[in-house]
Image 1 (tube, rainbow, N blue to C red):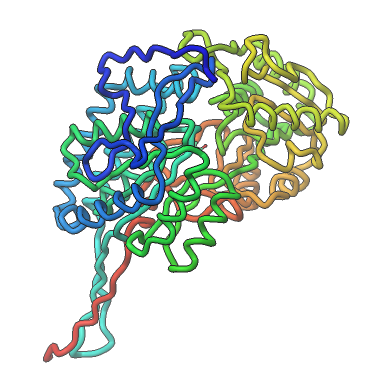
Image 2 (cartoon, rainbow, N blue to C red):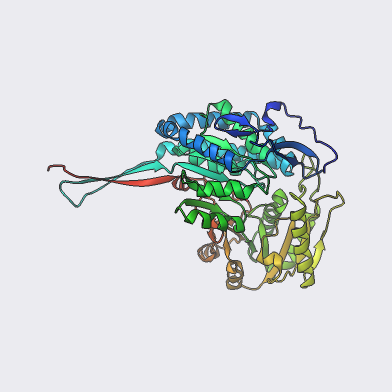
Length: 495
Ligand code: SIN
């Protein structure tokens, strides 16, 4: 039990919500139960929110169905105007939203500010993009027929979002869905529901009609009931999910029964390859950003750093020196670069990965265990000569732990990089144009960062291949996942 409560001092206190948002109403769970949302930096209580289940989810789905026809039939520009107001309100309340995000998730405040801007950008981008959803006419092979293609929203959608980007993953799903005329029932992660509820509060203020976006909250134990209602209720035509492979596969199985559409953004195991011809300053800076952003808790973090023979030692020395400078602390402290891990389970996984790598012969160059701050703070860690069989080479570590492996030539780097069931993001550094093309063409990943360690932007398609998922979020391609194509065959035309 938490001994203390963190005072959440927002300029606009009404953005801290302790009720869920269903059909345009703020409400408690039917049985009045709640669960605690805690600050991962201190374990202090931030708020309690409703523990909901099947009944409340069903009501949210019904409300989304009721809202659908009117929302769908509005001109795209009208929907975009509401979304633009949501975006403006998010930016107007950026300080409050960022603080809330840091308090419930732990990331440094500067990163939360970046995330709020990123989250707001999806609302603007997709609101505008939906104005450009065009149909088609196809030359008919028959004199008396015409062939038209029209585009339509998928319908009522379910969104299930993770704790590592509690604001951006909400809008990355809700924005394209709403922009094209879908309605959505959203279930945020139990660790971080407050950011999603604050977004719902701003959506209400922006004039989003009741039922177009509902937020159903629930604890880890409630998630299966809420998820199963979303996947089994025939009103819901699509599920968009970001999270673990295990849950993603389960949802996909469940959706198969009704041949429900899915978009899945699942785990990664990103290689970060530094070739001999790389600009080492750039490569070191990119690797530090990519690895330690959000304490390594991103699906696109550098999970396996591969350094070529010729630069290996220099890269390792410089990378370790930079990692040693990272200030570990509470996210609201201005100097903090690495915050706590989200919870004890995450801390244990990271500890297990480090121990396993060391047992398999890795050299520990920095950190390696709990940080003196206590709780779930983990010291930035660098390990060299990590075995490719180590757990941290095979699975996502999701922590501030960098594992480095030395390789000989380009072919070997590509083989190692592709030797995983995952295919979300990969990175490499090289100044050789021929190599840039060769390696880009052979890496089996949905996203490639070339001479950059930061690839997230609303205008580009985010998504993976292989077991990393299905579909794309962001960009003009991200619209396609929320629309259906209809073919109209028009006969009886005399010619
Ligand atoms: C993720 O880790 O799933 C999202 C990362 C991002 O969009 O930057």
